Length: 433
Image (cartoon, rainbow, N blue to C red; front, top):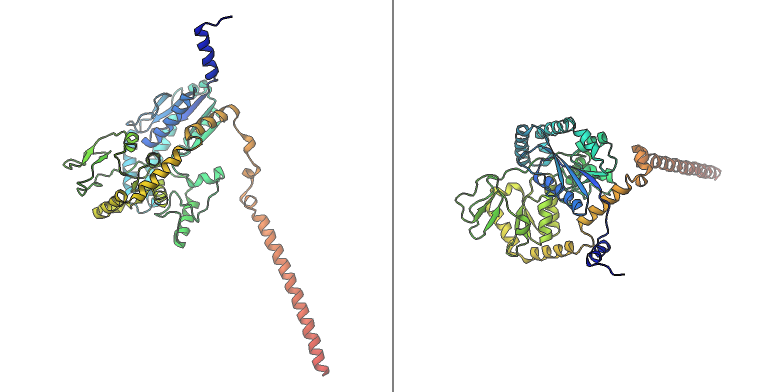
């Protein structure tokens, strides 16, 4: 019995690449900020590359943004709030830049909150959308925790298998939900002040207040840095991504509205990377082994910046230092001239690139497992139903304290009685003598 060449090739392909049953995922990704859209788009593309189907529900909040995905199917929802978003984001960005601490910008976020509410209402009430999504018969869904509209949307659609992901550092409220251990004594609040994990007494008190108060937050766009660059670095060729034509007449700056950041970071000629320390840019730089000079503005960027400094990957500056050219110049020269930053960045890159499993593999495998076997109720514990007194053993602690107090009182009572008896006996003896 002879097999034809075509049959042999087909059999070999089946052995090497066994057929998989494709799953269908819903990705909820409002177009609010480039980094978040690109992050979710890459996750969606990872699932598509694994042979699955992904539908991105993409409410258009900022019309200048794309879906962030090259391979997933996209459902665009016009929200008609571009002007409202532009005004809110401008005020939000200005407040973020002018505030000394993140929490001081809270009052300006009201406009952005209104934008998000309008976007959510526009999405849920969009004609025919809910029926169309139900007809897709999704196996699972995912999105960021900051997109709180997703919870209501999935509830309406009846999708019980879903995952929550984070494109930034863990927010304060997520620790309680995920049961990941945390402590305000050394974990800075994402809404906290300008300090890292080593805090003074006052900073720890302030951090505790922030951690307890800010269990969720909104995200605003990164402020525009029109006045950031000074003519003080004639020896440093730079590539920047500005919002406006701010480098006209400066010979050592190349201005572009878009730059291939990944390729630039992996160019061996690159000596340092100046960034606001957003999670995406910082992670890419770490994988590329590039030393960093970071100027955080708000939110998780501050915590990221202190992590960069703590791990010896670079230096961090306060945003107010941008108005002091000598401070910025000295910091940049330190990162460029001191070899310890490049050495530590290279070591970190080697560790990241040698991980047993990549983040992409972990995400795809877990999403497949969730879609097939979720919701994973066997992982739920009874603690989620306990009130605060039972959960933190306040009743048990109180009972132990009361019991110890009673025992101590009884011991004191016995000692006092014994002392009285002894004193009485001594008094009687003295009287006889």
